[in-house]
Structures are given as C-alpha cells and as structure tokens.
Length: 194
Image 1 (tube, rainbow, N blue to C red):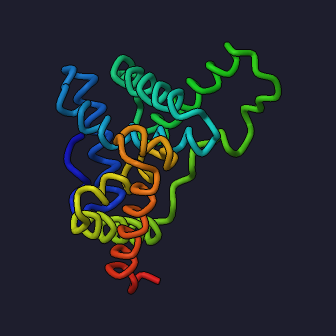
Image 2: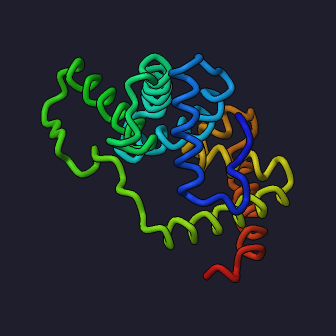
C-alpha cells in the first residue's frame, strides 16, 4: 500500500489529488498515480461493500474490479460532473448491481439507500474527521506490531476474530487478548477525543 494521506491535508486537497491521479492515468497510463488512487480507494470500496452485507471475498473482488474499471476508463472521468470519489463509488455500486443481477437474486432495489454512495460531509466535519483519523493513525503506530496487526485485520479488513486467528495461525483467545490490550492502549491515547 502507498503512503497515508499527509497530515494537514484537507478533503479538498485529497479530492484534487485523486482527480489529478485519474487525469494522469487517462493521459499517460501513470502507474504511480494508479497505485496512489488504488491505495486510497480500494479499502474504502471494500468497506462500503461490506456495509451492504457483501461477503468478504466478493467485496474484495468487486473493489478490485471497480479499480480495474477506473484504470481502463479513466479518460471518461469528468471532474465537472462528479468528484473522483463519487465516480469511483458509482462504478463499484454498478459492479455490485451487475453481480446481483447475474446471480438473479430477488429483491434488489437500485434505489435502496444502502446502495447509494455516501454524500460528502460538510467541510468542518470532514476536517474534524481527518484530524481524528490522523490521531488514530499516530496512536496505532505506538501499538506493538502484533496488536496493531489484529486491529487492522479486524477493523480495516473487517475480518471476524476466528478468521484472524486462522490467517495468523494463532489461537482465538490470543486474537481477543491482543485486541483487548490494543483497545486499552488506544483508549488511553485517545481519551481526550470523547
């Protein structure tokens, strides 16, 4: 994965950078720009799909397919019509709808609020969220590596505790213990955010 969003970077800065990445991909197939775009959006797409109760593996596949579509169709992006995020989340949403239609699952309503991309938050909320996100990232860096790993697998990848135990080849009790210890450290480091 590539670098984290820089401290102090506003939502507008990130949105502008992501639009510039798409332009670089469209104009000269810039792999570095794509890596930055992928690193920023792929985890967010996967989380978005998981919130719609999409199975873990399918969510990952759909996120990757959406990013592949971004690579192929970058020239079709029009920043005057939508932000990079809106365009990319719409691609992911459409991929999900296409998958459901192929499987002929009954009852899919494309107008369902869960299938709609999240609306942009007001700038002050976005800025506060970015500041909190930076504080959490810094607190995570202070965790021992084994604790940070289980927190990332649980919350960033959305894995169940049993799946984490299986992936890391450790007992389930060890996963729970590491999470409990990590939360205690994070709670102490972030208690002023309450």
